[in-house]
Structure formats: C-alpha cells, structure tokens
Length: 269
Ligand SMILES: C[S@@+](CC[C@H](N)C(=O)[O-])C[C@H]1O[C@@H](n2cnc3c(N)ncnc32)[C@H](O)[C@@H]1O
Image 1: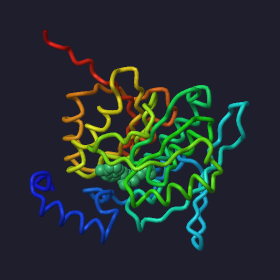
Image 2: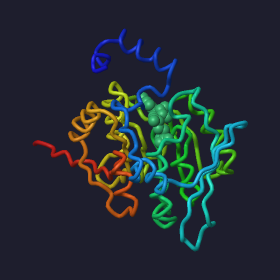
Image 3: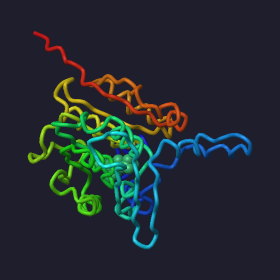
Image 4: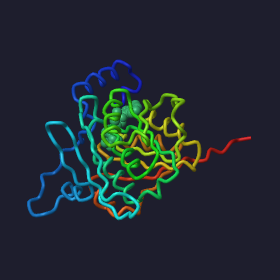
C-alpha cells in the first residue's frame, strides 16, 4: 500500500477497492485469538467502556446512552445516529469515536464551555454531536460522501443551532468558513497510509501553536500505523490522556487516547 503514495494508478485501484468494501482498511491485520472459554476477553470488556447502545435494523438508527453525574445537563445524554456504511467507512460509529465521546461526557460541559470545537473525519458525527449535547459549539467535518449522513444526524438530535457541517479534505487548504478551533477532536482517523501526510498537514494548519488543544483517539491495527506517528512527530508532541478511568480497558484493545501539542518551531535568524 505504501507505493500508492507515489503511484496515482495504484491509488486509483485502492480507491476502487474502497468502493467495493469501504471497511477494508479497518480490518485488523491479525485475526483475534479465539476467545478463552474461562477468561474474560478484552473485547467483551471493552463493551463496559462504551456507551450502552440499541440498534433498529429497519431504519438503521443507533441510539447511544452516556451516563454521567453532571448536575447542569440532562441525565443521561442520548445520541441518535443514522448509520449507513454505503457512503464510506465513516458511516459506522467506530469504538475509538465512542471512547472519545465518552471521555468528553466525563469531562462535562465546563470543559467545552466557550470553546470553538472542530471534529476531523467525523463520519456519523458522533463525537462532535456529543460535544454539542454537552453544550459545545461545534463544526463537524468530513469528505463529501459523508455530509448527508452528518446533516441527518445533526437534525435528528435537534442540534442545528450549535453544530455546523462542513467539507474538509485533509491536505487541502482549510475552507474559509471554518472557524479557528480551540479544541480539535479526531477519532479513528489513522488507517489509510496515503492519507497520513494529509492528516498531519491539516492538523498543523488548524493548530498554529501549542494553545490549540487536540484530542486524538487512535486504534492500532497494523504495523504501518507507526509511520503516521513518524510524520506527526515533526510537528507535534503527544501524551496519553491519563485521567480516563476506562483507559486500561481500551488500551487492551489497542485503542489509545492522546493529547497532541503543536511543537514550537524555532525561527533561525
Ligand atoms: C474510521 S472512520 C471514523 C469515523 C468517526 N470518527 C468514528 O470514530 O466513528 C474515518 C473517517 O475519516 C474520514 N476520512 C478519511 N480520509 C479523509 C480525508 N482525506 N479527508 C477527510 N476525511 C477523511 C472518513 O470519511 C471517515 O469518516
């Protein structure tokens, strides 16, 4: 796959394959070990760190319930999502997005207050929608095929007054209408190697300095993923979020929640 970065024909072939199976880059390299019959599996354990969910097959609606103890907002937080994999892998709510959304719920409305929040690679929009349900002002972004699902999800959650939906292709100039974010959210955006430098560029363009907060939830699937971090380290440092009580549970499923910080570039005289 690395060849596709330099070879437009190979990239076109990759994109054609994506059309036949939008989820293929999100398959793990190794098949999981068979579950031991007498031991709890980290995969089952992960369910305890995710919001409770119910899915209606007929209308493709997923309802996620986030419990919390914040007195100033509705208990619990309910996010209702249209899920539809036909426009691409983002049409499904991935565990890393649910982990990041759950972390925001634990942090509560005070954490998001008065911040311009922007989500990259929003897919269904789950993370950004939860930020808005907590009272945040949010812009959710993705590529054109996902925008319709995202708009439907803004509407069914009655969030049109606090959430905008925008096209943002990684690596392209940041569209004029997108406000400069104080907080950037990204979940499960590391899976397709040709997009690695594009995502790093967009993060760099959106975060002029270390004051921009970035929460980045990542699921490691294959060895090549580490090349993303090789590129990222030229512009960012990172630290694992360590105040999430579910950290050990999702770490065991190769999911990590990071806080990225833009590096200060020293100007040479
Ligand atoms: C695995 S999905 C994750 C979706 C969502 N964040 C979640 O956690 O459920 C990756 C998302 O990144 C988006 N994406 C991939 N490449 C992109 C690019 N070059 N520019 C913008 N978005 C992109 C996809 O459309 C998709 O919605």
